[in-house]
Image 1 (cartoon, rainbow, N blue to C red):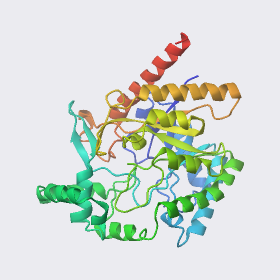
Image 2: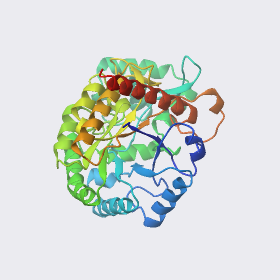
Image 3: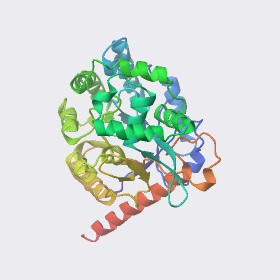
Length: 398
């Protein structure tokens, strides 16, 4: 038995085609109905159409990433009741078409954040990075968020002011566009005013209130997922730190413990993301993989170079400072445990999570940062190589 390698595909508009994906080593497709607005029900007809399109190239679609949670649900305001009902209907609809795993997140406003999407790596490929000082400079001097200064030490404010003073107008515009970039699968972005308004809607919501809102959401959707046979997998915050005064709760062992222990169920689990969790040196992805192995429903595997300030740069799986070999060893051990116990969720699907943009794709249009063909293909090859090494060693009794 082996882990099941998957590939994230953004639909017919994705510049990476299913025919190309067939040559990467991926065995399954992770996808979503990106054209359906957050909060709306995913209709049977659209699910069927998407599944059949994927099947034409010999793949099965069994993992959704992501069934987005509407902001009203996170805030428990506005039309949240209607959106929760839509969410439950979408779970049932997906189950009827063989979808058995749904990844979702509970991150307010931003699904992820980077400060530079055009970092040139040593080999000439283009990757992404997160720089704390760039975030502070944007927050304090571009966004001009009320009360932002309270979130930074005086020394950090001085450093951020110096950093900002050295930026050209073009660099300020580039930083703004990068921070405001929209959800994965879309190159649309917030305007500054839209972003300010979205942040303001969370002024009275702290971590504990957001956690309570997540628990209320889980109380409604996990029973539906259980009856439909669908594994729900919550994705960690990316990065796992406070941003722009927003509450962040899926970011460390203690909080993930709280979340998974609320309504304990085999259908309420974790999407292990080594990159999101590992972006903080306070999180050890190997420790977390071992701690939550029995509740991992899907894995995003990527590596990075990190420092004590919380800055990081994405890189190839074999080149970063996290031990992905040990993570894969844990996942394979968990797969064997599930097989021995006769459990149904033994596929242990994973995917390469981001990959640098390589020279042959520099001029290819519409590639979302981290979602190139060649960079992810190299990442998948390295991950499958690590997995093969673990299985070979274990097969020899090592």
